[in-house]
Amino acid sequence: QVHLIQSEGGTVQSGGSLRLSCRITDDFEGCVAWFRRTPGNKPEGVASIDRYGGTTYEDTVKGRFTISQADDTTLMVHLDMTNLTSADTGVYFCTAGDKFGDCRGFGVGDFPNWGQGTQVTVTS
Image (cartoon, rainbow, N blue to C red; front, side):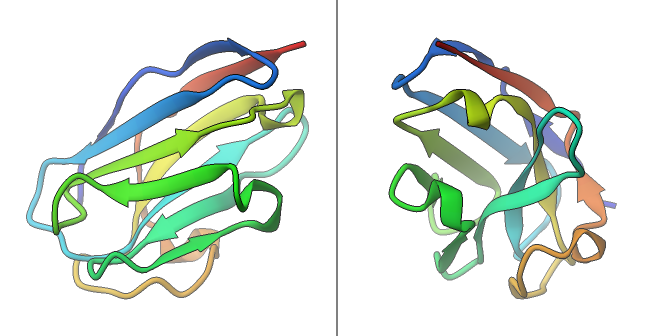
């Protein structure tokens, strides 16, 4: 079991920016991903990072979102979101895969560990 603690989200105007952070409190070297659940939809993966710093993004956030590690580990991961739109409104979850696993896409089943979720609201 891996424990994840997320920072709070917030409300921003369209075109604005927001940073989310996620801290893993256990020994962990695996894949960390951010998922979001938008109203009426299932959770979808938006960005992932592996222990080597390799990143993957969902198409709609490419060029706008950046996932990063605070150091050379995945124990603290940030998601910097820019040029936000109302379509980005939702609950964002930090998730972690197996303790020593690689990133293999955004299959929900590959991420058994989830943070508490945080609301991001983008207003027009």
